[in-house]
Image: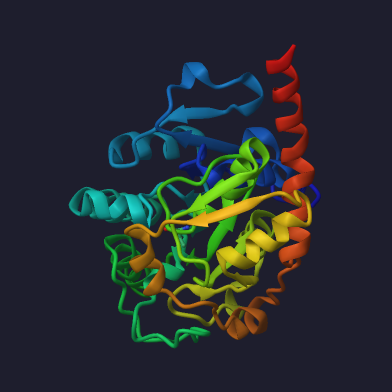
Length: 331
Ligand code: AKB
C-alpha cells in the first residue's frame, strides 16, 4: 500500500505494539502513513527499542493520564488498542484479566471521546462464542455465551464500543479475530497458540506435543490476512459499516492433525503427539469456523491465504532463521 500523501494529519497510537499483532500492524501502518506518524507503545522499557522502531513510548494503558498526555503531545487522531490478556492466560487470574481488558478499553474510549479522535480500532475475538453457538460455523448474529473471562471481556467490550458509537458518535471499529498465525512475534497466552508453536518446534526438534486433541477444528487466519482486514476495515466508508458489534472474519479452519499433515509436506519426518490440557475445554467451547458474509458484503472482506499457502510462507520465513542459528551453534 502507498503512503497516503493526502492524509498528513493522521497520527496513530498503537497499544500492545510489541505483541503478536502489534509487531506486524505497526510495520504495515508505517508503510501506509510513514514511520513518524505511528506511535508504538507497550510495557517494554523504551531504552531497549532500536531507533528504526521508534517513535516508541513505554505505556501502561491502565494509566489514563499517561495515555492522555501522549495523545495530546503527539496530536493523535486514531488509536489501535491491542493490549490485552488472552484466553488461556486470563483463566489463571480472571479478575486481573478482566481489569486489564476492560479498564484499558474504557480508558481508550474516554480519551478518544474527550479529544474527539477520528477513529479507534479494538479487536474482539471468536472467544465471544460459546457452547450455544452452532459448532460448525458461527453466524454473525449468534447468541454470545463466552466461557472464559477473556471472552466475557470481548463481549462486554463489543457492547461498550457500540455504546460510545451510539451515545458519543465515536467511530470505533472492531473485528472478531480468529487464532492468528505469524512468524515475527510469538503468540502469547491464547488457546490457538499451538498453531504458531508447532512451526518453531518442528524446525528445532522435528516433533511437537500438542495440548489440543487431534480433531479440534478452530477458526484461524494468517497474519497477512489479519493485518489487511484491519486496514481495510479502518479505511472503509463509515456509512457502509452496518454491524453494531464486531465483524466475523473467516479464512481457515483446521485441526492439529490437519496442520501436522501440511507441515509434513515440508518436513517429511515431522511427528506430532497429543496431551490435552485445560485449553482443550476452551477450544471445545468455540466454533470450528465463522460465517463472515456480513464483512464480505459491507467492506468486501476476502481472505487470501489457505492452509497450503500459509504453511509455505511460514516455512519460507522461519527455515532460514533456524538454519542460520543451527549453523552458528555448530561453528
Ligand atoms: C486466543 O486463543 O485466546 C486468541 C483468540 C482466538 O482470540 N488467539
